[in-house]
Image (cartoon, rainbow, N blue to C red):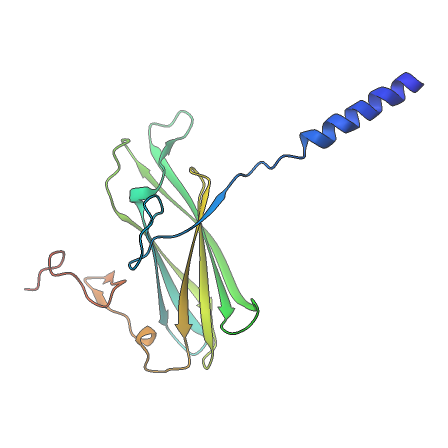
Length: 187
């Protein structure tokens, strides 16, 4: 009986230390934006547009130049796998979350030489008129096991603020205040 109790204690001890390590070893880094640049971080741009008094659309643009593309099992494609999580927090409060959304974005390439492009996604979030908010974006590159963060202040107090208007050209949304003439020549 004491031998059985010894084996049972040894098995419990082994299981305890087997489960002590973390399976996810993600590193957290600030994202690269228009203003600042970090060499290995992808460029993440956020844009908010107020559709109505209680609804806003948020576009997320991720440049794929710094994303890691991996070949999955027997597939002949290289795939970038990214999870985007947005949180709307009231400005000036201690992390009072108003709304949140999580989406998965993936891109695949036929070769390991990936063409630089933007991965874009549109999401709708609930934000009431008359308040200021902060959108905190967390982008998880699952292949690289790295976590990148970006934020965007949102002003729903000003009815005629810049986030109440949307700049588009040929069904393309501008993440800056102007389109570059070299990309879109004026006719």
